[in-house]
Amino acid sequence: MSRTRNRPAVLAAALAAVTGAAVLTGLPATAATGPDALADTQASVARLHIGEGVTTRSCSGALVDRQWVLTAAACFADNPANSAQVPAGKPALKATATVARSSLTGTGGHVAEVVELVPSPSRELVMARLATPATGIATLTLAASPAGEGDALTAIGFGRTKTEWVPGTAHSASMKAGVLSDTELTLAGATANDALCKGDTGAPLLQESEDGVALVGIAARSRQGGCLGESETRTDAVATRTDDMADWIATTAGRSWALLMTADDFNGDKKADLLAIDAADDFLYAQPGDGKGKFGKPVKISPGKWTGMRLLAATDFTGDGKADILAANTNGNLYLYPGNGKNGITGSSVAGSGWSGIRLIAAADFNGDKKGDLVAAHTNGNLFFYAGNGKNFASGTVSSTGWTNMRMLSAGDFTGDGKADIYAIHNSGDLYLSSGKGNGTFHTASKTGGGWQNMRLLSEADFNGDQKSDLLAIHTNGSIHAYPGNGKGGLGTPIVTPAPAT
Image (cartoon, rainbow, N blue to C red; front, side, top):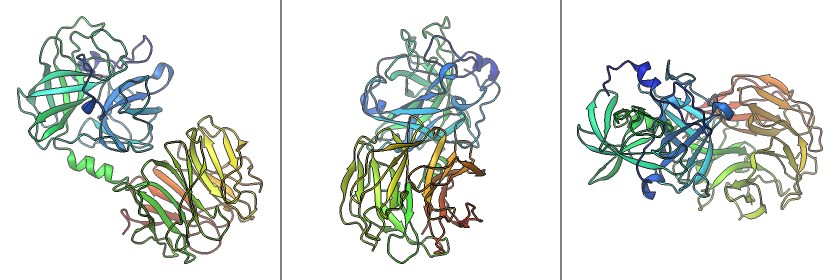
């Protein structure tokens, strides 16, 4: 397919697969029609489910970092027939990525919501950040040089095949590289039975060499010859080159240096410290606070890795005056790590089970008994209160409803009345304050600000020692923002620590 071909005409020949019988016109989508993909390569291919109801789209992508999927920008564009431009930030439509699952109706692998998009400034590519990292799953390596004309490539995607409208497994197709431009690579099926079809824009193009299998491109557009429901016989297609995008991909993935974050005075110096699971090695580190809003060189908290943790909170759960850590694991268990007041922990215990449906947590003494409690937002939209007893937690009670669109929570006495409150960031980027009643329930939330859509991690801490709750947030650029609280529900100008903090 020549690059000089009119782009809208090409786009019109490729549509997105949906879960029903209808299709969304105008969206380029590709999928391999060949046999099931080999397990070792399929494990690194993501299936993206975008939108709900009539807006549903399906795409593929390449897992290039355990928390980032590389795919085609058209997957998330409002109207790709006119433009494949995608705004940075949270996707306009709810999106879920499934990785390393041999069958979409099965179990295993990793399933996570896409919480951030970073479009390429020079290519029709986008990096999609997963809410939780796909730990233990191999990522695809980028080729160091472009594919040459005539080279054999393999495409792997979850879209339509010759016989299936919405297949439940990834399929492969043998493709032959054609003409190379500065940004794209033309393709053609190696045989009449190899083609890219509707339903999987973003499928990775892989090349095998003596050094192993490497990613050379991301499928963009296709003629769809031989695909189910198509009369076209031509199998040529276009992929966006990735061989020279290593720096952009590494820089984007590197922004997520902290997988999870919470904060408290963990070293006993009366200054709040930042606790973060580092994306580079899965260890938990404390960055000591200077009492003014800046944070210093990380100190490792414990010898064991914190792989598999998806939620993190800190407060004095045991009632001994020392900050402790609570972590929810992907296995559904809740773990309590008592702190020793000197940048370390004294062991761990299971403080609860069955927490797989909990998507957000925040910790504080909500009922005034000097022991740390939890509030947790469930996937059903309810906010639950869990009273702590120093070792574990009582059964949850519904505190309020309507929390579905809140994407971050943090708890502390922000209003200065001695009762723990909640700050929450809405999907819109608005900041809401729910003042506490002192019994695990809250007054109706009020909007206190906007523009928080680029914050990706949030925690309360009194970082300046004025006995007023402050907010700490990690920006999508990796910097740490410390917002001083005024004790009346307001926040001051943030102090910023660049990322990565050293």
